[in-house]
Image (cartoon, rainbow over all chains, first blue to last red; front, top):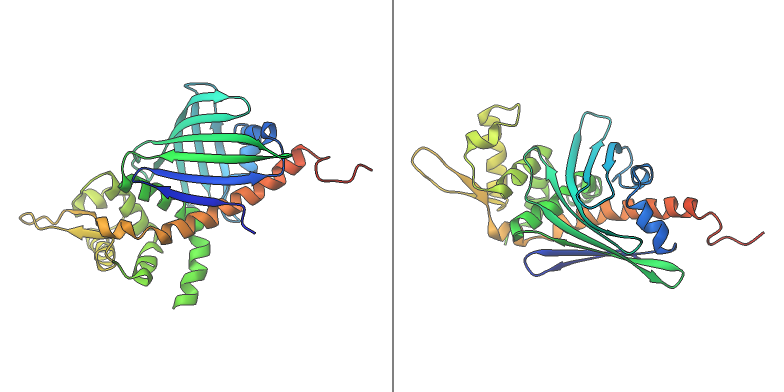
Length: 154
Length: 112
């Protein structure tokens, strides 16, 4: 059973939903506290997040840096727009590759779902090209899986 | 519609992914693209040729320059990108399940 859904909507949006077994308070905190974020927002085995700045207030800065221990690093920066404990986080973010991609506007909602939480993350990109690149940025983490697929194809 | 195998092979190289990211910001010449990389222009040109061959970018002739941009049809083939992102997100959220369980140690366990 997969708990993750991903939906491309229109030309500008990308929506991710996921259910968690714990109430919104915990899921909300795990999205904001650097010590918690650094334990899960990592991609495949071997990647770490040596830098995690998360100033959880409107206007507060975000900076995540990832490293794979083999010299590959990349980072994103952003700012918080709105925080509603324990139900909503609105922020903007951009990848640096190394040039900054246009801003990705992200609204993350946490709703009670039985004893757990339904998280809905809605991303709004300025155009389809930027959306494609945002999706592609996940490739830096997702490539491992795709290499397996490539091996199967070749 | 680009050939999926060619798209995957094209995306398997980090330099080519970085080139695509650069082109998402706007059209660029080989010189523009080569700047942030510690690679020779011929090496970048070879990568561009692969990207062009897989239908992810298009080039036009403007005098001696051949500016590149993302191919609209290439990006319509969004499936491979989604598959890879799904792999990344799935791993992250599975790990988050563990973090959440550690935050609320009594949840899901028998009250002993």
